[in-house]
Structure formats: C-alpha cells, structure tokens
Amino acid sequence: MPLFTDPLKEIDAASVKEYAQQRGAQELSDDIVNEACQRVMELAKPQASCQQCFYDNTSHMVLCDSPFTVNSQAARQLIEDSAIVLMYAVTLGEAVEQEIDKLFMDKEITRGLALDSAAAVATAGYTKQLVDTLDEASAEKGYKAVWAMSPGTGDWPAGQTANIAQAVHAEQIGVSLLPSGMLMPRKTVAGMIGLNFAEAGGCSSCGGSCGGCAMAGHCGE
Image (cartoon, rainbow, N blue to C red; front, side):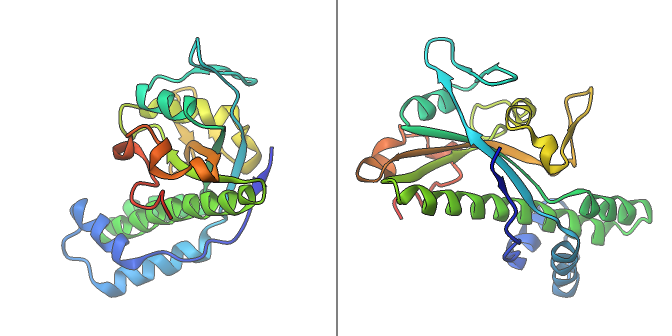
C-alpha cells in the first residue's frame, strides 16, 4: 500500500480555539492554544495509507482483502460517478493521544481540551495535505480530485471507518482495531477520495452531495 509520510505543515490556531470553545473550553487563552498547537507539532508522527478502491455497483461492495458494503447512499452515488476512487487512513501516532490522556488524568481539563482539539484540527489538515498531494499527482494523468468523504459525515455511519482502515491495511501505519470496533490511536480518520477527468471535474460531477463532502467550497479550484 502506498504510504504518505510528509511532515505536518501547520495547525490553524484559530480553528483549534473555535473547536475547543464549541466543546466547552470557554476560558481558553491564545497562549494555551498556541502551546497545544506547538505540542502536537512536536509529538505527531503523521502517516497515511492509501489504495485504490474497487467497487461493485450492483452489490455496493468494496472488493478488497476485507470486503464490505458501503452503507451510505450519498457515498455510493459519489463512488459510482467517479472515474477512480481511493481509500485512505490517516493517523498522527500514539504519542499525541498519550499526552492528551495524561493531561485529563492530571485534571488539566482546559489544556487537555486544547490539545485534543489541536490534534483533531491537525488530523483534518493532514488529510487535506494528502488530498492535495494526490490531486497534484493525478493531474499528470489528466485527473482531478473532486470530492473526499469520511464515515461519520452525511448519511455514512461512523462505524465504517474501521472497514476502510482494514481495507488499506492501516496496521502499516501503527493503527490497530480493537474487538469493540474502535481504532487506536483514537484520532485515526479514514475515508475515500474521488477522481474524475479534469475536464469533467468540479461541482458538475459530484452528484449534489456537498453537505457530506470535505472538498465543499473548494472542489472547483
């Protein structure tokens, strides 16, 4: 499976603060936010595993070593409208989550929320880096990334994150699947990316599913 190991470029402090405040960290100084961002940059060992998705339109199954049915009408439509679909899993590694757990155990709740929020924003940012890299690489062959979607968005059950992680052999990047179905590290994300021919790309090919698409607002760029 192709592995993506580029360094994490940056963490948007404003997004971290907004996310932490939405989760109840109202008394959050910029210093704590910046400290959290810096700590994630120091501890993170970002990696991604990616592979092409082979999909059967009739059964709605992904055909791989661990085949599974895509339980989302929105995702099915996006997949079926795409020339190529790639599956991915992204992780920042265990060290960040160990630090988060330690802060909460030490009752450093505000700092724990800040670090947890910084890790979430960083994971989303690294996923965007992966999409951008795949977009650039596919452009050489006339393709463009026109959508990205993960379980837990739209009508796609979050539990299918584990299916995708298994399909891309995320154990190669240090991700393990617990008997409960939970992935470790917990901040692991997985999803799919759709490519279309550049001249047919953009909003015209997405099937009207912008509400569940990570590229919403950017797919025409």
